[in-house]
Length: 331
Image (cartoon, rainbow, N blue to C red; front, side, top):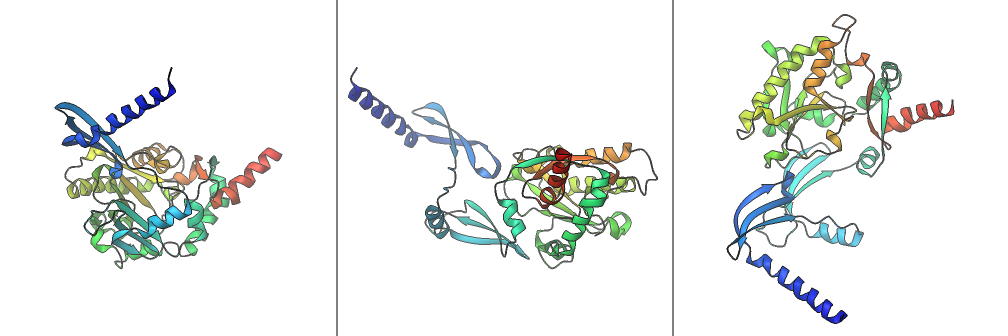
């Protein structure tokens, strides 16, 4: 066995393989994943059918390369600005006429809470009883709202920002102001790729902060919102059908003002759609409908024990559930 012959054979094989790519003749785009990060093309090579899948390489992690990457951004176009949040399209390729291939989100100035949220962290499953919610979690939520973290939400609701992006504004049944809501694109969506569609329905009223505040008396309103959201979505995006739309709420949510996530069913599942984080709107309505005990104006989600996921950097883990865990383990 000659090691040089084997190496030469391998090099020839690699060269022959690499020569196939320029010979590929495109017939059509066969498939495209969320955001176009991976595409599958149907074509031919020397009159024989061929499939070519292309996937964007992972971003580098060393600082010098990242600095060079940042400096080479071109054709930055602002899509919107609201309070400390900004989002853009940009190109990482040389040349002034290259189409955008990047979606950028900027938070400036960011807070320690933002930094913790976007840093790698472990996750924990926690169980929140009605008592823990009342005595420990709700006071935390009140504090978050008092710190003015909802300015960007109020900017939208009060007509100061993002008005051109609003897809639908519902005044509420018979003009009931406390049941009004609006529908707009989520800032993380590129607003082009329908299979990665992500919208937010934000309620006008300010006394419902999360799904914990929902009661049996809200069932009719929730059903009304669901119907109107689906109707407005398919009207705005005719290529999307109602049974291709998924509606859910987060608990714990990113911000404490009731909102509903509206996404395409083909949106690639991430941690934000995981069991223990995302609670389907239809399931929440069913829970309220089948809930027993107490008058409708009082019985609600605050009466249930919920199990959900928390990041280890989340204040509720460090301030509430980790100490509770330590007390149980130490007891």
